[in-house]
Image (tube, rainbow, N blue to C red; front, side):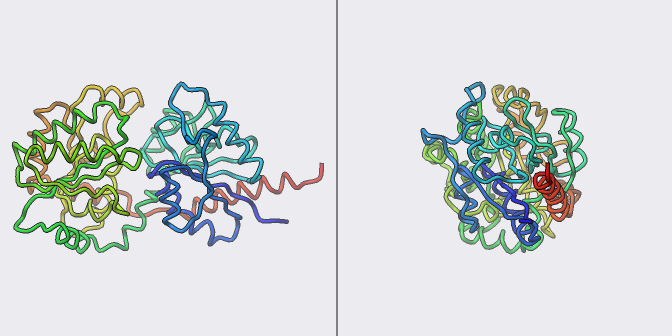
Length: 381
């Protein structure tokens, strides 16, 4: 009998990072024939990782649809992929904005077991109620939240995309990147890690950050990292920084975010999960790196998060970030975040994150389900 066929997909950077973490183990198990499908921007990330994924796009060249749009063309495209590749199981990423490849495959899975690699705790996305049968999540808290929100099964496996951080020499990475930036004499480095331009209130929050920087840390070097879906925003953000007399370095097109994160004394974002990349870098550093400041100073951003069922950015309740709800709080909390006490407190909180991942559990559970389905399909009727 042939080996089980596994269809793996991703459409966003977070999903691609999760998939990259598990693919080597899936292939090394020799229990699957693995097919990888991706849409932009995950396509470029997986391609750079040597995966050569099949590109997914609709007839008009787009790869995802907005909430409320007719999903029929998307589902039809997902169904064609399933018919062509005939997988015995699916393993998809989780993306929260709109609907795309991952959701189309779940809607087309039929009787095939479907699994999802959750990145943001409690996050799931589907067309209708076509959720994955099991979500692999970071920890028990994420499992409880996922079950409560969607009524789906969830299994804690640790933070997959951060497993490789154990091999990093984080202080050395920090020192090398700061030297590359020309940072000396204790000059603060503040990063702004943007989300897609469609996130409501992000433009206003960035203005609040610029004002706070000019008031609190005018000597700071600002590292700008745009989201791959909205690289065009760099020119507006750079113009605002330069117009305020601040020095900035645009790292948007650099291959990996980790060197730039490690260089930062404060990482700022609305609620991007890049903040957890910083947290896990901190956890693997023997000395403190800095702190995170969430820019929730625009009401539209808070309302958007509330509609998504997110009460606070991931990590805030565990001490992994300060949350600014007004423009004045951005200024006050930026000053706090730049202080030594905040740096030490953040480092201590990061060391309480789950220290190990269970990628072998994912391989085993997916393989058992795929092989069981293959056996049933091959049985005489």
